[in-house]
Every structure is written in structure tokens, then in C-alpha cells.
Amino acid sequence: MFTLIHNDGKARVGRLSAPHGEINTPCFMPVGTQAAVKTLSNQDLISCGAEIVLSNTYHLYLRPGIEVIKAAGGLHGFMGWQRPILTDSGGFQVFSLAKLMKVKDEGVEFSSHIDGSRHFLTPEKVIELELGFGSDIIMPLDEPVSYPASKTKAEEALNRTLEWARRSKKAYPSTMDHGLLFGIVQGSSYRDLRKQSADELIKIGFDGYAVGGISVGESEDLIYEVAAYTAEFLPKDKPRYLMGVGTPSDIVEAVAMGIDMFDCVMPTRNGRNGTAFTKKGRLLLRNSKFIRDFTPIDPSCGCFACRNYTRAYIRHLFNTDELLGLRLVSLHNIYFYVMLMKEIRDAILENRFTKYRQEFKK
Image 1 (cartoon, rainbow, N blue to C red):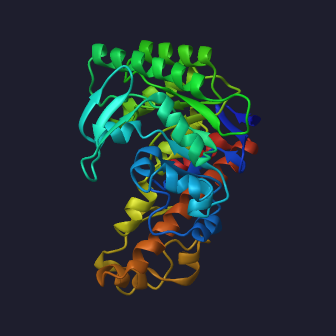
Image 2 (spheres, rainbow, N blue to C red):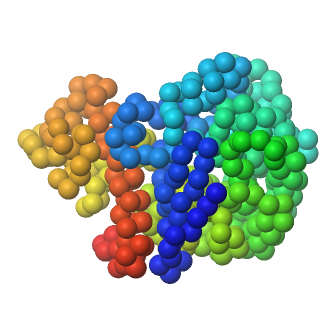
């Protein structure tokens, strides 16, 4: 399922085999929360080189519902995407979006943020939903905690997450062709809880391991610290996924810690606000200094937007509320992230990742 190809220090290149194709790691997964990466078509994503996208169980369970997706032949058929899909369990969304949420040992009871309807999700129900979606990578239900959290609260959430992980593994069929099941390490910022979480998940046995509960209010230094020491506890022969992080710099630093997989809404969210990522930093394309700038967003970029449009034109689109502007900058940003991962893989394979990391910081 996961082949480790080469190490350069702790940075690794690997290949993850999933039912709908292979994924080269380190990789970035564009976020398509509701079965669509905002403003972009599947062809846009393919042109950028995306090998996998992420969708969210909480949102898809509420709309359009599992029966509609199963009737379409699964999530791949429903959204017309034939490459791998990772589905998050929706645990974070339940805890951050849902109204009148109540956590029980059996599962989570909540009111929909859409219409107030009542629902109850158990670890077994979440696995059933994700199997119904036909997900290539399945994330179990977990209980994240915000930062800061007392150790008592963090330990209580961790113990519940571990019990849900055991139940999820039991509900996950072992005799059929289906997606890979990952475990999620929790424990807030407490080193001993993180180690306990990782040790227990390894005993249960998963196809990969995710570092959860990161980027929920901590400083950048603490995010790096927690990610680094959590990665140390995880098996070297399994993929490691840092959930919800982050900036290009975050990704480069996390790769140096031995992380393999990333997702974040930042490229498309920034794109919709007119902010482009480039080799020389971020560009705020709404700014007046671009009125007569007839160069591409990034002259070194090979994306569709940079090959065909100028900064001046894209600024005009944003200032006249034309939707094409949102699409072009989002496309550029996804391309930038995917190409960043390719550059990282190449640097690792050529044993020059340390130098690449130093140059990237500049």
C-alpha cells in the first residue's frame, strides 16, 4: 500500500497505492469539502497535476446525503473524479459548525448548521458512510480539542478518540476491496498524550497515521514542535498525514520532519480573495500597483492562468466582480502547491532537500 522510495534526512519520497490510483508523496490534496474544489473543475485539477482530492463526510452526509451519492455509483461517480479521494470523518466540522452539539461515549449528537435537524453519528456510522462513498482513504471519527486545552480535557478527548478508533477498525471490513483506513493522533500539545495516542493506534493497526488537532489556535512554533515530535512516534513504513496545514513554508518544514501528506483550504481561499502564491512571496492582485502590470502572476509558472493572462487583467476581474478572477487565481495557487510538492520530491530524490529548504526560506 505504501512504498518508501528514498530518504534525505527525515524527508521522504514514497508512493501510496489506493483503489483509484497511485499517489506520489509528499503530496498536497486540494480540498473539495462538498465534492467540489471551489471555483475549479476536475479538468482544472488534472491540468495542475493533482493526484488526490479531499472531501468531507459531515457535509456530504447532510447534503446531498448518502443515498444520492450511492445511487450515483459512489463519490467518484457523483463528482466525476476518477482519481483517489480522501474523506475526512467530519469530526472537526461537527465540533466547530454544528449547533447544540453533545458528545457521548457512543458518538456525537448534533443539530445541522443548515436546517437545525437532529443527527447522531457514531464511529460505526461514519465508517459505513465513507465505505458508501467509495473513499480511497477513510478517516475515522475523532474528538479534536481547541487550543489551549487543559490536560484533563485533552486526556478525556484522547481516550474517547482511541475507543472510537478501536470501534472504527472493528467496523471496517477486512475481506473486501475498499479504501485505506487511517488512524488520527490526538493529545493537544501534551507530548506524553501524543505518544500514548500514537502507541495505542499502532497497536490497533492502521494503513496510515494522521496528526490531528494541529493549527487550532497555537503559535507557529508550537505547531512545528507538536508535529515534529508526533511524527517521531509514527511507523516509518506507513504514510503520515498532517491535517489542515498549511502555508507553503509550513509544508516545507513539515516535510523535513518526515510528513508525507497535506491538505489545506489556503490556496483556494486566498485565490478567491485575490491573493496569489509565487516564488517571491504572496501577491495581493487587487492592489492598484498592478493596474498596468502586463506580466503573468508568476513568470516562472506554467499554469493556465500564467500562460494566458496578466496581473493587470486579473486585477480588473476582481475589481469588476467577475468570477473568472476567482477561478484563475485559485487555479494558479493549486498549481503552485502541486508543483511545490514535485520540487520537494525531486530535491529529496537528488539528496539536496536541505539546500532546497534553506533557499525556500529566503
